[in-house]
Image 1 (cartoon, one colour):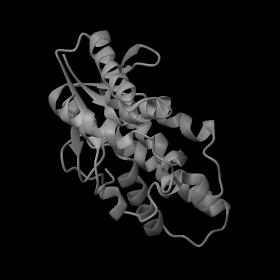
Image 2 (tube, helix red, strand yellow):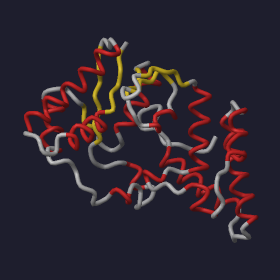
Image 3 (cartoon, one colour):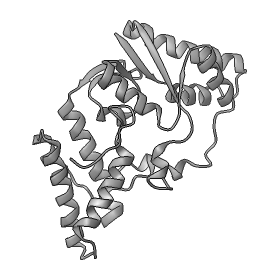
Image 4 (cartoon, one colour):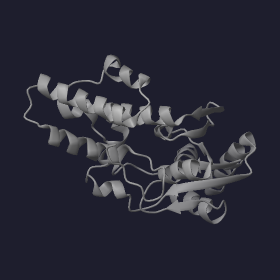
Length: 236
């Protein structure tokens, strides 16, 4: 089986772990990390993806991942990245994220997804978490449920606000639970939208249905991991 590997996580984890080591050690560690994943999985081929420039989500809102801007990169960041591309065959993904390449690699080509990033649970297929050494399957229905739950909660790691930041009302377990019994994305979206509408009414905010649709469209485009090349999320 062919697998896609989240090279961004390797780049940063190895980079920060080898901050005070010679660059040669950092490069050797990057190779070892990739080879270990391939060996553990018995993969016939490993597609390593790294995020390049021009993420389309930045055109949706200008503060996407703004909370990460200005944060330090590992000392050997540039050298490890170059080594992963030139020697390990990593593919630099431009205009989107490595996550997107992992997503449509899984859905369109049946590749497994090797990552530690929970966001990839929004994509159906076989997954591998090398920290837990756990292989697991995400069904299409579970992938949709994960995405629509995120549409309620947001993702603070990526500065995606969600229900609480929008309305001041938290997405409680009782609010998210109904999604667990839904299989249809149309039904899931309707539930999420109604939760927002109810929260706005509770807070007596001046916001109409069209405003909620615009908000959810924006948040959905930020959260969606592509399942096909060039795909952009739209409400079902």
